[in-house]
Length: 285
Ligand SMILES: [Zn+2]
Image (cartoon, rainbow, N blue to C red; front, side, top):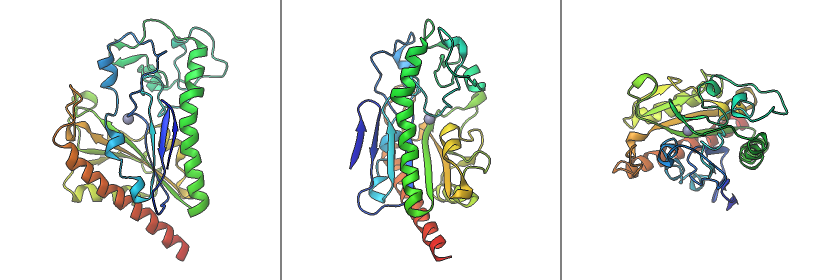
């Protein structure tokens, strides 16, 4: 079963047995809204997408998990930012509520991006308060509603839930650093039980991949918002290096795509087993 809000999101529910795991891909969307009046080349926006992350995790429902995908581009509105992380100078008038711009907004990469990449402006003017409010209501809130709805339902049924927030990253990171194959983020050990991060890192390393934890990406708004490990709510961000599966200039899949998809299917199976096992263990205690 799938639930769709056209051009906004799709949620694929488990086929067969259910396990308390939600995977979400907030940045793989490429349905560019008609009112997105960007002033930069479309190609630059497309390079900001987490291309193919939706496809890489397509096996989630057959392993009993739920898979939620954003269909809109992250450069239109970013579900992985706080709703008040808006730079006031992007707006043509006063925002009706207090704003809380962080260093992401200061870098042009807040809820509403002002830069596609450092030095390249996204718009050639300001946005109206009404259009930003509409992006929040039509895209951001429905996405977050699904995330919390699914996790609440899983916690009610199983007593715990695991949220895996899935992304991809350029092969060169901050300061031109060569990135490892995977970066896991649990906001310095605060968003899930430590055993879960160690389990995922261990599985990937045994398959021969290089993995860092919270270095340099620690996880942002989605895992921050859903995590409450003391209440059985575990959240982990996974960043996959794009060089493993695509050409970062042409955005075409590479020969590495199929093997990586198989790796991730094994990882999904492992995570679903881990969650099911932890729930059974808790029930027996
Ligand atoms: Zn991302």
